[in-house]
Amino acid sequence: MNNQVAQQQKPTKLTDLVLDRVKQMQDTQDLSLPKNYNASNALNAAFLELQKVQDRNHRPALEVCSHDSIVKSLLDMALQGLSPAKDQCYFIVYGNELQMQRSYFGTVAAVKRLDGVKKVRAEVVHEDDVFAIGANEDMELIVKQFIPKFENQDKPIIGAFAMIKTDEGTDFTVMTKKEINQSWAQTRQKNNKVQQNFSQEMAKRTVLNRAAKMFINTSDDSDLLTGAINDTTSNEYDDERRDVTPVEDEKQSTDKLLEGFQKSQEANAKGVSNNGNSNESGEASEEVADGQTELFNEGTIKPADEADS
Image 1 (tube, rainbow, N blue to C red):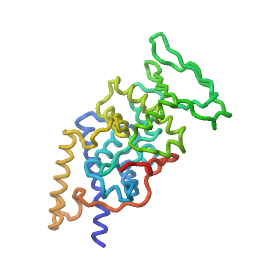
Image 2: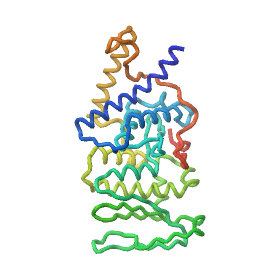
Image 3: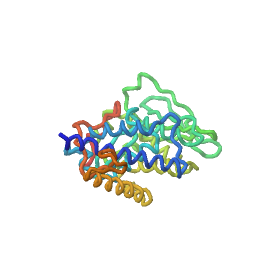
Image 4: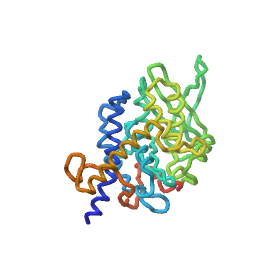
C-alpha cells in the first residue's frame, strides 16, 4: 500500500520541476505569462490528463515516456500559457517521447499573446460559398469577400483561411483543400480518422498553424514564446521533426534539478529530507504511476487514437 501511494506521488514532482523552471524564467529571462494564467493549476490539470494517456500499445505514457520529453511537453504548455482544462492542448505518445500539441483553441490563445495581435480567426470555405481573394498595394494577399451559406455547411470543404489582425494591419493565409490534405499527409499521425470526422475544425487548425508560423517568424516577440509555439507546431510533422529533448541550456537546468531531487530521494530512503522532514521532497524517479485507459479528448477532436508509437 505504501509503495502504491509513493508511486502515485512521484510523477507530481515533475510538475513541481516544471513550475520551478517557469519561475526561474520569469525571474531571469523576462518570461511573461497571461494575466489570468495560473501555471500551477494548468500543470496540475495536465498531470491529471497525463494519467489517462497511453501509447498505441495501451501502455501508460507516464511509464514509457522519458522524463526529458515529459518535462519539455509540460514546459512548452506553460510557456504558451495553455491548459488542457480549457481544451487548448493534449498529449500524445510517440515511442518513448511525450509531445504536447495545441488544439485550434490553443493556437488562437497562443497567437493572441504575441505583441500587437488584436484578433485571430480561421474559417473553412465550402463548395458554393462566395469567396474571393486579391492583393493590396503592397502585393500582400487579402481576402476580398467571404459569404458562407447555411445550405453549404454539409457540402465538401474546398479550402480554409486564417486572419491575424494586428496594430499594423491584417495578415491572411489561404489554403486550398489540396494543400490542407498535403499538410495532413506529412503529419506524424498517419491515417488520421479525426481529419475525416472533424474536418472543419482540423482544417481551421491547419491553416491557422501555417499562418501563425509565418507571422511568428517575422515578429520581435520573446524567443521563449515564439520558440515554444514553433516547436509545438513542427513536432507534428515528419518533415520538420525535431528532437523533443530540451536544448542544451534547458537540459542542463533540468538535469541539475533532477540531480537535486535524486539526492533528496536518496536522503528520504534514509529517513532524512532536505528540510529534516521525511517524504516532503524528492524528484520523479525512473518509475512513474500507472495511467488510465483513455487518451485526452480535446472537446470535439480526439487525435490520440491515431498516434504513432
